[in-house]
Image (cartoon, rainbow, N blue to C red; front, side, top):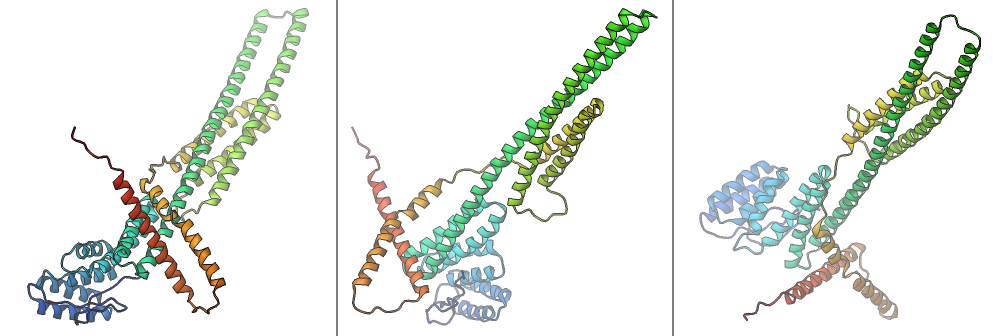
Length: 423
């Protein structure tokens, strides 16, 4: 995708590879302006775009009505990487009066400048990139409205449309990933609450058992040296309590194993989701990586808690469960930083544009089939057409159908407007 460049000061009027035109007489000091444009063109062709810009600016000062000077300024600004200033200058030429022959070229170059700006924007914000690329597509389409056989404009329009579709696919993919991340975050919050509750219940049971043991020891001390039947009853109660504690620990072990399995499933899901996304190389770990690390540490604490419960160390298990809950909370906080709410708004023009692009497809396919059938039936040899020319012809034909569809749709909408009646 190239731009159509400077305008020549030699009155030939023909577009060449660099799209050079002449500077005709105008108000102000046209001869001086024409000479400055010629000097600027020499510097431009030599690659000295800074000097060329200075000459073109002086030419505009010498003849403020010279749109050629403004056009060449825009080209030099574009080559210098000053895209915003180039856009502004191309817009001035496109809106200028007196040189309608310059408008298509200015609009073409403006489309290219907007395209470059859009590509830069899309890296940070795909939605803004789509909006800017849509502007570029409209500019290239405007060129074709004035010059329907402009192959470069048709090719650039098609490239811009492809880029827009790529960005829309990327936005859709990001939205799907955002939904998956939010779902994982909700599951992780629920899991953290369950782990916290498990730790608290285990700790409460240990506190109750410890308090109960202290009470029993106090009662034995108060009873003094009483033995016999009372001692047998006390031993029976202790056996029943131990059996009850064992049942509680077994249930806690099952509950903890369930939490372990859920945490491991989330950890694997997060890692799989992370592998699908291209991470930026930054010295600091990303929120997603921090969440993964916290989940790894939480799983380690959960396994230790499971072992303590199986080895009848409930007090140690309660501590490890609390540490696991804390690590899960850290993972929730990290993942919350990664999963920011999306402010993506629906593209109101997307459906209309896609409809406009898809509407002529059936007609195009039908015509292609008819053309192939006619070619097979024809006995006369046909001239060979290059693949590039076929592509150009296809793009121009596609744009012609789209233009006809837009015109027909505009007429239909105009007929549907309500008529005001004076009763």
